[in-house]
Length: 119
Length: 86
Image (tube, each protein chain N blue to C red):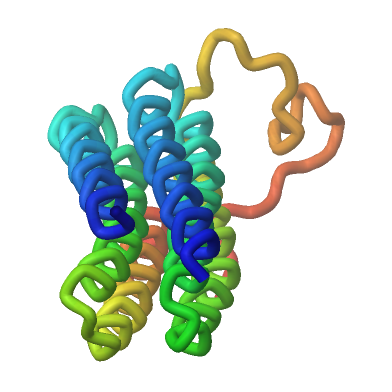
């Protein structure tokens, strides 16, 4: 039982370090889209590691922690996708190092999606 | 032992929220601020869970669930507003 608590607290410490890496990446990335990517992925991983570590330390709390983990796994990619789509359609410029842009009509050869649909 | 390690983890999470707040203040566009807000709230969910362990109260996890729901709804609403208006 003591070993399980130590393992859980080390997992919590690892998750908090990953959250710190996410915030540093949010400062250093050159572009809105890179910031979206680093913020969402790293913060999801860090939060899930922290909640799993607390579930190892306190085994009686695992139901609510599981609800939180499933909730974060469901909502975080949706919010990042919606905000990236909004950032593209209000024409925030990409970084200079960008290689391919599949939504652009000139480089992909297709018509782009209409901006003002009727929904 | 365990509570000391978890207190250190809470301090690291507070530091990361402070670094993210710098991007929230500085960010050139609205989308940067929304992303910084999202990362801050996700980090705050982890911090609330740690505080629930340190105070030994399971009821604080309900606060974390409602907090995550409100942050998700606010990000969706702000993204829809800056894309095509309300």
